Length: 238
Ligand SMILES: Nc1ncnc2c1ncn2[C@@H]1O[C@H](COP(=O)(O)OP(=O)(O)O)[C@@H](O)[C@H]1O
Ligand SMILES: [Mg+2]
Image (cartoon, rainbow, N blue to C red):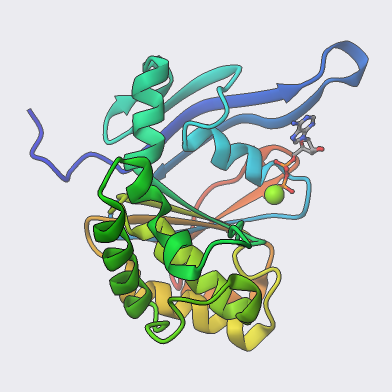
């Protein structure tokens, strides 16, 4: 048996997803192959409509591929039953979306505590832990206010705290900087690289924001449903 940690975080083989049938069929992702490793921040870059969100949804147990296989830590996620899949989404994957998806009537601490509440942890304990994670993202003084009082960059930090509080090994960011100005976007990604990435974690970032490419360990290009070969950052030896 292979030693733990040598399995790729994610490996996708020939995954395909189409929407609609017949003349109206759109193939959003077309026989895509990719591997992502623990300890790396992998970017998937491509124009709007190229299939990035659809790809992420198949990798994270949200959307079942029409064809192909997705393995996470060596296990084929699309053979899991519904309960196992729900468990996988809750415990293994953390998501950060472009428009944050914060609940406007909950305080920042309550927003961050949601994954723990879903895991049936005690409310007060969950809120305490949420405050601690808000400290990690530099928002220790903003724990009891509503999201509307925060700047875009601060809201994104709340979303990051919420994504990492349950300790998921795979973190997925879908266009995380699209609603932020350039400096704030770069600050968020640089923060994630310094404080959130570690050797037990794999971070996938989907973006068409070239301003943040410099933070990628590796970049995959997506175009019209096709995922092109890897370009290692800096040199061509990967
Ligand atoms: N639920 C859906 N129903 C029908 N078409 C969809 C659906 N989701 C995505 N698509 C289509 O699939 C293609 C890829 O979309 P998407 O994965 O959202 O691209 P991206 O995230 O790169 O902008 C687009 O043509 C889009 O219109
Ligand atoms: Mg998208």
